[in-house]
Length: 247
Image (cartoon, rainbow, N blue to C red; front, side):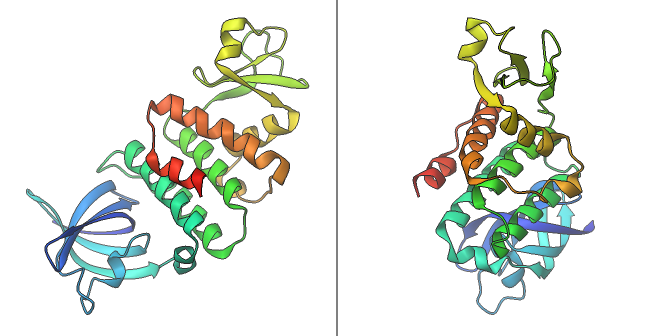
């Protein structure tokens, strides 16, 4: 069966001298691995379209033995990202998140769109890198079924106060008056601005989530929340995140 899909290459694995396997995030197929014959040749017809982090239109043969690349056409290379090791390390971490959370052979249009938007802003220096990390982590959590409960305190339903606490294990809010010692150990404090930022990213229409700026004062604070929340919810440690943070 011949399938045409738009996809971004998020991982590659060399095979022999001229071939490789590419792992792609596809709008219609989620994440799958595809055999790309001759894609490592300098003059190969599929060389450009199968480069890491390139967004391409792919024509793929699906057989009982797996997926095989027939042809490719480059849509966007996000070329400028390759000149910045910090950006590359962030994209590697985001790719690891995608590989761990996106099921194979299921539509992933919204997740692909989230990744493409993030790469677009990284490529053009239009948003701070730490802000893009926060948006991606929080919105990905929402799209894969880990949407936190952010409306108000889980006990008294208070929607706002000078300080609220976000339980990283339960994914909900609790106010200072209802906070217990056990919950304090599992939670991070949020002031009004931090809570507003997290609510905006998680609850706004997708078209709006990149159209705001987080001040430098709050970028690291909110990034710590989003990072720890995903790490705890996924029960997964990513070496690529450690590499990103050490640069």
